[in-house]
Structures are given as C-alpha cells and as structure tokens.
Length: 196
Image 1 (tube, rainbow, N blue to C red):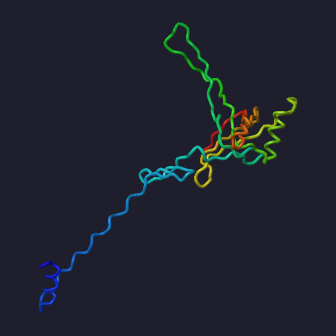
Image 2 (image 1 turned 180 degrees about the horizontal axis):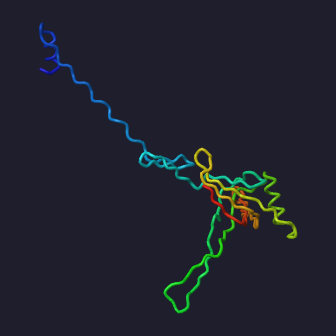
Image 3 (image 1 turned 90 degrees about the vertical axis):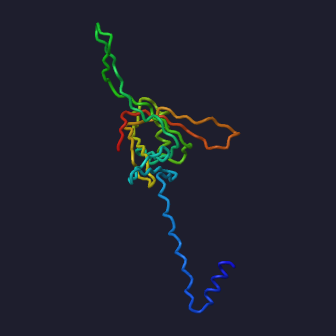
C-alpha cells in the first residue's frame, strides 16, 4: 500500500487525527551583491569599500577654441610639459653631477578629426595664419580641452594659452577607400595649464 492510499484510509476513518501539515518552503536566497565595476560606454565607474571612485576615460572629451566655439576632434596628442635641465659637474669630483632647472618646454598640440568645412571661424583662422604674410601679427587664441564624465561635465581641463596653428595636413585621397577625410592641425602654444 502506498503512502497516498494510507492517507486516504486515514482520512476516511472517523475520529482519526488529520494528516501532518508539511513545513513551509525555505525562503529564497538573497540576491547576489552588485557588480563592483561597470562601464557605461563613456565612463568607467569603480566601487571600492562602498565609495564610488570615478575613473575617467580617454575618448570622452571636447575641444573649445576662443572665437571658434567647440570643434569636434577624434584624437589629441601633445599635452606634454617637460623641464629642461642643465648638467653641471664639479671639478675633481666624478661621483655625481648637479642638474639645474632651466625652463619648461611644451610639445606642439596635434589634433585630428574629420575635415572641418562647417566652422567658418576655425577655417578662416587656420587660413589667415598659415597663408598670410609674416609681417602681420599672428592671431593667438586659447585652446581648452576638457575630459568629461558620463553626464558631460568636465572633470579635468587643459588650457593651452596663446596658441596658433603651425601646420595643417589632410590625409591621402584614395578612390578605393570609403571613409571620412581626416585632417590634422598642429598648434604651437605658450603655456599649458592643467585645471582640476
């Protein structure tokens, strides 16, 4: 006789005790902890000890030039400051040498992006600087490069003061390529400031 048959017989006998109630099912397991790091596509966020630390990424930035507004570029290089040193050796002592600071030098700023034919002020500034007479005063402008967070707010900013174009170059034209024409503009500048 099976357990089911025994239960049926027990319930059919008058005065028999009711069958035992089965225990409730165990509670569901707790949800897994949140992932410690996520990537929003524009911005990486890392969680450490309950505190969110924003980690900037290199591909979410904007460029603004005085008098030209915001200019779209896909690549920027040349954000470099280097202290020039003068080496001085003491006579009769070959164990060490002095390195004295002289001045700070900067690399030229190189920006690459799609050929800009929309921003008239930018195109005119490049043309007037590179193709005008050297007797004219060079029109210097400030270039602001801002690294952005996921909301589009600046978190790091570099300002190149008194900048002017010294080289313009377009990539090779190729009838077999189906791609956007990229131009490269190189700027010299006086001072590089980094603002937190």
